[in-house]
Image 1 (tube, rainbow, N blue to C red):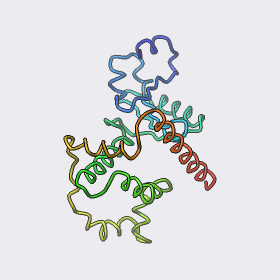
Image 2 (tube, rainbow, N blue to C red):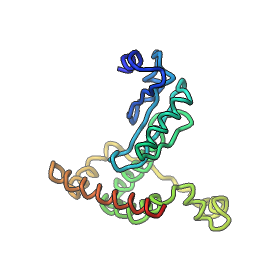
Image 3 (cartoon, helix red, strand yellow):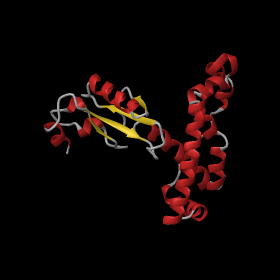
Length: 209
């Protein structure tokens, strides 16, 4: 497909995939337009989420990256450019680590899935909707900043976080389905609720800006 696109587009046209896993260098391998190929990875629901991860391949030109960023900004999105490609990009790598730990905690009988969801939305979710993890830790250290936090409270965070057991996912999945339901009606109702809340948060943050 990208070979066809390369053959039928001008040299100044960016060729972008919204893949959440394929690396741009793999897509561009052997392609004459490798310097125009990149990833523009949105987050679901893409019509509400501002972020687009712009991921250049090894051969992607700075001009192509700049053009893609301009297009996404013109669409009202927030493009974040990675300095280099990496499997899973950044957002999905962070999600994987977080979700693995969530699964582990439920598997270990520490917390129920629905309680973990509420814990996140009432703490980390609210915090990270306003400031990111680095700024959060910097403010957590008080006037002395992140250095103070890491040298004091942070130095005590030395516990083993463990890893989930894929063979033990069944009971967790059963519980999630029991709590949140499955099927068309449940999906429609919960996605509408998610979108209303997401739109409210985005609107409120825009107003504060």
